Length: 414
Image 1 (tube, one colour):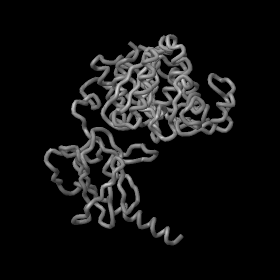
Image 2 (tube, rainbow, N blue to C red):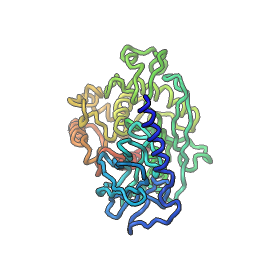
Image 3 (cartoon, helix red, strand yellow):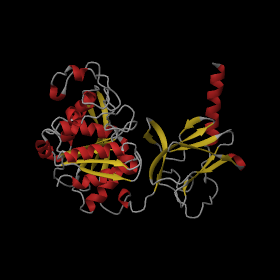
Image 4 (cartoon, helix red, strand yellow):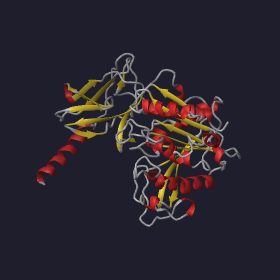
């Protein structure tokens, strides 16, 4: 116990001495020519710096550390110690987009205080934004801007107050109009902040609406990491839960206590349909018909959109599924039976097509899920299902999902 206390005290002392003086606080930095400070930096006159070839130069002041590493995108880079205890390294060139990273100081993983904090990978972590040429649609531009607010609703599933983030388009406050709504879901290890912060939903929607490429709409980002209270046994619309639903009363991680399955979605399905949607429709000027509702999501949220969106056509007429692993490409996903998981999609295709105005799938071209997604899309199209599909350069990461939302939004409510 005494040794543990000393170790913890050493770590606290190290952290304080390591980051007491941010780079550039008392002297003018000399940066490599052609480099830039990413928008994810706290101090725009400091490191890390993105170089001309998209490699990243990191510098960390850690005079008492024995080893310092950067873990960026799953690759660890050993940093070299220089004068005054300053450690530095330049990574390999990175693909454009948003990337989480961590520092390892003497083998202890910590967030980099030079970076703004983001909730991802089931923890608060650091991140870096690598610009992509031609993707100004993800940036703040000189157009009318909407608003993003965090509000709280009471969940009868968790028997607690829960946050939800809501984007309203420019002009909402002055207008008396009612708007269509997109319910957008995050991936595993993230929460309601993901789409609004990492995903840049407001910037994407502002720019699309300003150029007339998308109709004004509200976007709602709920936290799908929900667990039923022990006393909650009520199903959708007040009905008593079946054994299938009751089996998941303690489901967590996106309400997927049973994994990617209809059963596994029941907890979050109840949260969304019985709690989130009624709250939004009571407190915002929204159109309340099915044609004015869309559901989409990435990864885990893509699976939620598939099951909840496609199996509740009386609620949603528009569905977007981004980079889901349910078709394959992840551990435990195999032998996906499309008709069993979405009854009628192949055996009553004409009726299925009538129920949905937009059905859209996407995936990154370097994502292990891509071939499985292409295969299921081909099976749908061969069966007559009216499904749109696109792929974008990138792995399982935010630049792909931003592009997915950017495209999906342009199809909606027209």
